[in-house]
Image (cartoon, rainbow, N blue to C red; front, side, top):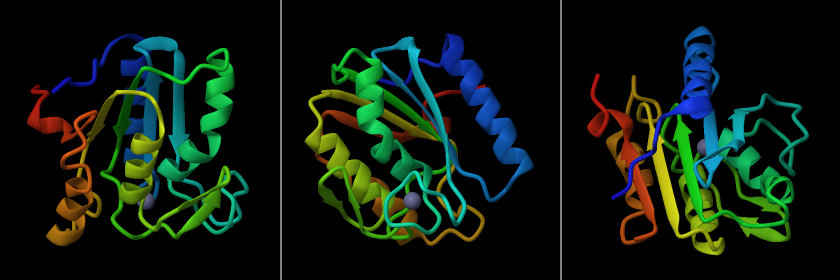
Length: 170
Ligand SMILES: [Zn+2]
């Protein structure tokens, strides 16, 4: 298991999304960093109805925006796919709340956990560290939804998906 290294600009970006989410309960956000390089760092928010980042319309979850933008990030990395991907989410990926989408020439299944799983398996990066600050719908949590989404990553050795508080104290 390799945990996210919460340092430098990555730490600052996580502090920013934590504050933003505290002020807007409808917002879900994530920070992604590639290759532990703070110049390859992106913050993504969930997007309201009317967004046009994610094909197919409607509201979009932050994970979907990440997938829709992936090729742009590759361009920013001189056309190279990353080796290491760190993602810190304010909430765990949903099991089935986001719809099936057509993005980047592929069909992506409903649910952000399934979409992220497909991304992990499709990309060459061999070290994925995915942390989340709270379970999706923690207040009215349906355990099968919350834990089922995380269970989708079981057996994928290149992905380490965990609740932040389980590893990082204080
Ligand atoms: Zn989702």
